[in-house]
Image 1 (cartoon, rainbow, N blue to C red):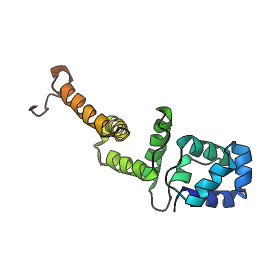
Image 2: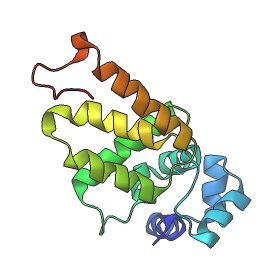
Image 3: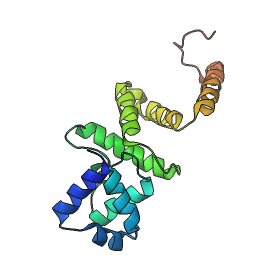
Image 4: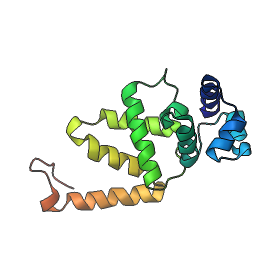
Length: 155
């Protein structure tokens, strides 16, 4: 089930039409019809945010199927969506967010915050940016004042 189907389901449960959502949210009717017709996983974050605000639901209720995503992932996905909006990334596919969440959940607890932020930022970069970020982190790891006491030797 994509964003469009979830949006239709939420609208039905709230007794609201797409036209009413358009009028209350300020999102064009064409945009909303497009979302529901193509049932995409990719919708601008600002659009999802406006829809969620208008319908008084969390953005993750629109983006993710609650049956297939556990609560911990939904909370992390919400944080990622908010971060995405804060840094001005207008589109992140729902599946990509779930992949990032899975990587964050694999991280040790004490590094979740840093690793999550790092993984998220890394996944927002294109191939050139990812290569450059790895080079920069490798350079930082060579500086003694930034190294852990038990850090492995750098090549």
